[in-house]
Length: 84
Image (cartoon, rainbow, N blue to C red; front, side):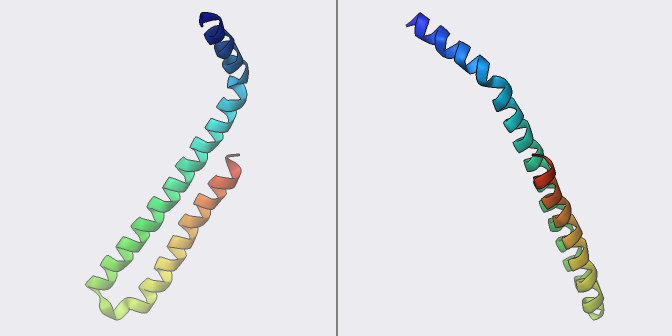
């Protein structure tokens, strides 16, 4: 049983560098996408708050909010593709 465990451990150690590279890329992608989602959420919440304070400026706030959300989401998508 100990010999089987040692064999399994040596095989895992040989495959570790390849697995570490994949995990690092996945963590970087997740962090970038989390940042993009956080940016979209903040832009949306602030746009809703601004409309609540000044309903007459709904059209202008909507345009600026959509642009801000698109930029934040674009950065998240770029992080997804560039981290690999």
